[in-house]
Each structure stands twice: as structure tokens, then as C-alpha cells.
Length: 365
Image 1 (cartoon, rainbow, N blue to C red):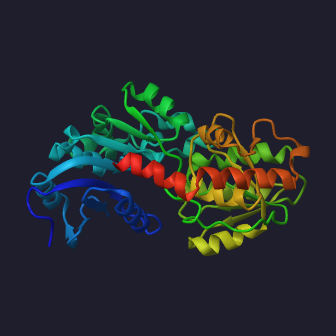
Image 2 (image 1 turned 60 degrees about the vertical axis):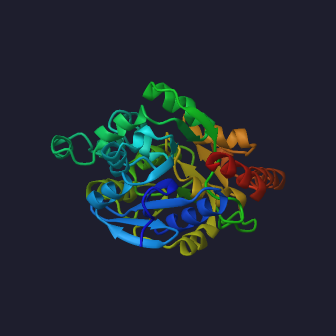
């Protein structure tokens, strides 16, 4: 059963994820004072509608027909994907108060902006989102980046990090109202461990995405690392060409590079992270926040490019991080006990249950 016609609802549009979506739905239901409905996008053809009456599977066409019958008070966009932008356009939901909760790839991955976030050795492996297939999809009127770019001018509120608010508004040339948001989950909802500074291993990046700039960052690291330094790189899902380039680098590197090429669940991944002492992010963009926060809390030392807005966010929070631009041999040393405690206190303050509750209640109500 689905919601009766003309009930007033607060609508949440989400991308289905086995790691996040259930937790986000529960969290939004807990903090909102209005009745809520959720659209969980599984694919362009498969959508799950969820409201107080239960679940119903729908096609995109069925969903659009249903949405126009509802009295929706406001729309929360949890990742502005091509499909969600298509829904906004086809149902005229774009004319409702729209709140964009920016994840990262929904801005940085757009054809108009993505190229600038690759370093030279990684750029040949950039997402190809402007070729013949993309043009055909746009010509046929199917969900595409064209709808995303069109949706931006209808969005009223930007929910995210203040460091990215200015960046996105300058790029999009559209003024949205800023609502501060630090992270989806509070410290009790994240997998936080006790202090464990590892055995000297380096974690490079958080995924197979070439925007990790693995190749360029490895070259930077090799200028300061000793021979046989162990480096773990998660690359499960990497495309063949990129995987080959990484394997070729691995074969001639002075470092002991170990590639994690199979998907792991969260508990297995963080068990592997017990041996890590240093977290090196080669991104020029915010990415992998859910990975780096538990590692910083455990006492790991982080290196980020200064151009990465996440580095600026973590500094604003009061966390101790290090510049990848200026990395030296002397920097390959553990954080002091004082620095570890500084990072843990900063995370506990920013992601406290009360601070998280106050932010979400303001955003939703």
C-alpha cells in the first residue's frame, strides 16, 4: 500500500546503497517532525517507494505518475544523480523547496568540472562521460548530466561543508542558501576503534576511483619512503586499463605495494586497517570521509594535498593533518600522544550525538 492521495509529505530521494541507505532512512525518520516518504533508486528502471505504509517496487514511469499526485512540502536530495535530476524535471518537483545534501561525486564527477580533479598520470583514466554514449543518452532524453546541470538552478539550499559551499557556488553560478552539515552520522553510529597506531603500513586512497590519483601520489611518496615500505591500495572494481597501469607501477616500485582487489565488508576492511599507521589521500576533492574519520580517531597520521577541501574542513574541525605537497622523510613518524588525543577530542566534539541531532533537526524542520 502507498500513501493516500494528497497527504502532505517530506520527500527524500536517495541512491540505494547496502552500506548507507537503511541507516539514512532510519536517521531521517528519527529527526523529522513531518511525515516522510523515501524514493530509493536502485537503477534507472528499478525504484523502491517507502512510506509509513510499507514498501512498493516501481518503475521510473510509475514513480513519476505517483509523485505528481502527492502534496509534497519539500524535497531532500541525498546525492544529485542523473536519475534523481530526471525525476525532478519530469514531476516538476524542482519547483518545490529543494535541499541538496552534497556527497561529492554528484558535483566533482560532472563533465563540466571533473577533469580538473585528476593529476597528470591519472588523467588518462578519467571518467569518460562526454563521449558518443553520453551524447546518445542525452539525445534520447534519458537520465543524463544535462538534467543535473539543469536541476542546480532550482535548488534552494546547499547542505554540506562550508569549504565546498563557496567552491560549488562559484562553479555553478547559482546562489543557494547554506545549511552547515559535517557528516551524516554521529560518533556512536560510526565504527570507531581504540587507539592503534599500526605497524608502519601506509593506506593509499579509499577506492579504485582514478580521482584517488594513485599513480601521481605513489611517485610523490617514493621520493621520501625507504625501500620495501608497505603500501595498501584498495582497488576492487578497477577497470582493466587502470588496473594494468597500477600493476605495472607495482612491478617497478621500491615499495612493497599490496593491492586489495576484492570487495570487503566494513568490519573486514577496518580489521585490515589495524596495521596502518599512515593514511595518504591523493584526491584533489573531498572523498572517503567515512574511511578517514575512524582512522584518525584510532591515531593514524593523515596526509592530504593542500588543494583538497577536505584538508581544510579537517583543519577547521581542529584536527591535526599533514601536507602531502610538502611531505619529507622526517614526516614518516607517528603522531605524538598529545596529537592523537587532540584528534580524538575534535572528532568527539564535531560528531557528538547532540551536535548531530541539532544539525539534522534544523535541516529537516
